[in-house]
Image (cartoon, rainbow, N blue to C red; front, side):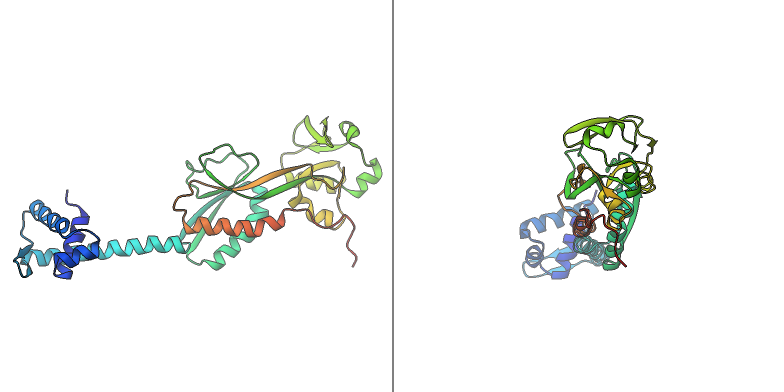
Length: 299
């Protein structure tokens, strides 16, 4: 099979009119260039060049062949330039996955800013509350919350997302604020029929009055006065700020869940991945702390 590289070598020799100049341009030796052209002629069974000690002349067949090889060389150069440009500027489709809540809360502003800045890029968001296999599902990047399982992937920490115990002022007024030892008998909103919460080093197995499988529903139930819920700060921040919820058991988070941007490799990372992760790091981290107080805003 004839190598496209040999065709590019031949086009360079004809264009430069010299084995020496072509070899210099290609970064190889004159002898190597000459040997590759001889090999090409032998494979084709056609004399492409007439060589003398003083000059190089293209045969009729060589001239026709040069036109085709020159076009191929130009296409290869164009392909190389396009790929290199993609390393400098995001181009094409970026497939990103994330858990539902974090996708809705974090990624909307990131994607909007990213697409506004890089018009040649496109983004596909896959929001799913399940374990994602980055490679098998053909994804460029995934947002992972919590402990990492696959050490072969590259993970960039975006921040630590705090989780808080919260309840409505009305609930606390009616039932009082429990202490850590009383949590087992308190009215709670949980994610399982029985689960264990830890407060101030004390572990309590709670029996929820409401079991849900969605964090936003849990937060809404806490606002409605159903019970104490354990939800991410990003979800309860506004309700705490405007007084609809209060943080219970002190201001310290119930736990911290690390948020990562995960992608397949750190070698030759495409610009669309690299710059999107940079945007995530810039916009996500300031959103993580629970700011403000539980006092209602004054109008």
